[in-house]
Length: 186
Image (cartoon, rainbow, N blue to C red; front, top):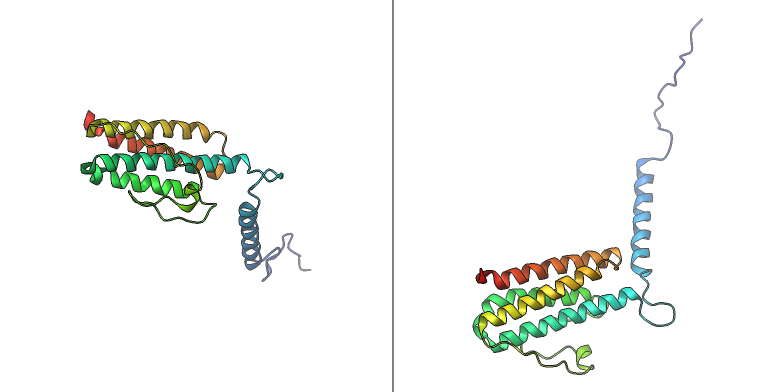
């Protein structure tokens, strides 16, 4: 009499889903998640007004545009600082574009170039009063960078995940800019 083993013998086919089925299902789930993340962002509050997240993003873009105007004013008043300020100014322009991602991509403005068409529709911003000395002008920009960095740090507490990460990153960059602008003071 032959004994039947008390354990199951392995078969050539595994029970359960195959690897290809799992990969196809995972790809479909990832695609659905990406689409849901892009389309259901809460573009408005349902009554035609922008959502709080959209308003926060728009404010951050306006704040970066204001800082950009300050850089432009300092560059216009103190041309010898151009080599030191242009890289920082370029970063601020990229920050503005990152926050304004919902509108059409606009090329970064250079000092002396015309404002964007969207910005020209609103009232012209007040002129920026730039300190006379180069060192004071650098401190002026450093103070503006620090203040904006602090405000962004506070704003990220109420922002959704992706916008909070962007705010945190730009706030950290602003703090680094403030340091770079005043490192000769030490």
